[in-house]
Figure (spheres, helix red, strand yellow):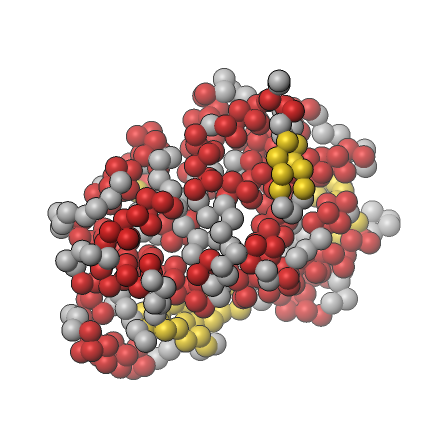
Length: 403
């Protein structure tokens, strides 16, 4: 039976067809299968118990939506060659392959100065060698270097296939209905003008709803204060483990995880060996270690690990203005005495953070095309006053401390 006939069942879209054997073979590859063991939303399941879907789910959802987008654009007489179509599928399938365990928490802790996009690109180049150069065009599109701009915009823009899937998917799995966008209608409204991906005028309200849904999902889900405190605590556990590893303290860790704990990995020394090690690292490695570290002699490491495993998280306050130095130092003093920690150690338990959310930026606009073929930025085309407000970044501040 040829690989192309494989069909997968998705709780959101129903049946997803794998478009061809190259895509199927990439999905079968161990690099891609790792995404089954990486949660799409990190530790958000500590807030929304249903949010346990993976990056594997998300990548397959993106393939489904991309197939739809290609059909719609071809129907509107947009010329997309078979080679370009295939490259779009491969690029969107692999756009997140460089995410590490608990995604953003890990980006700052174990690998310094290397973004998940750069690691995705390294994986793509490796797969391109395995598949005899069949991914070259996909890599060009992923990097935004392909001359046909709208193809790159389908992969990465303010209204790309990635966002159309993750907003709908994350809304479904968290149960936060405010994020439930009509990705179907948005795709049906897509067109291309002057090599730009545009939305027909009658789709303007769908775009407005999409942007507002994105804003609500950020405040309600992605920047939920409990989710933020859990992620910060995970960063601190990893930071402490790294600090102990640098001093030569013995820590329980899987082979792949140990490599990142006991070596200083940054952009300059991110080699093929590092990539192979990274491809073996997933959420399970981190969780297993944290469960073991609950019994470690180091008080900071064991306390933080226990708090995460048992979901006894730090208390968190959120406000519009920054917390004053006095407020922070008072909290530090109070809990330093209470917990019997030194000045350096208390920073793991009392800390502040600035959070920022900008639902829409006019730098890379979403264009609405009117009946006469004129393009207009959605922020100007919309009679929704809120959209102008969405272009301003909103900043809030949190302080975390023990209960």
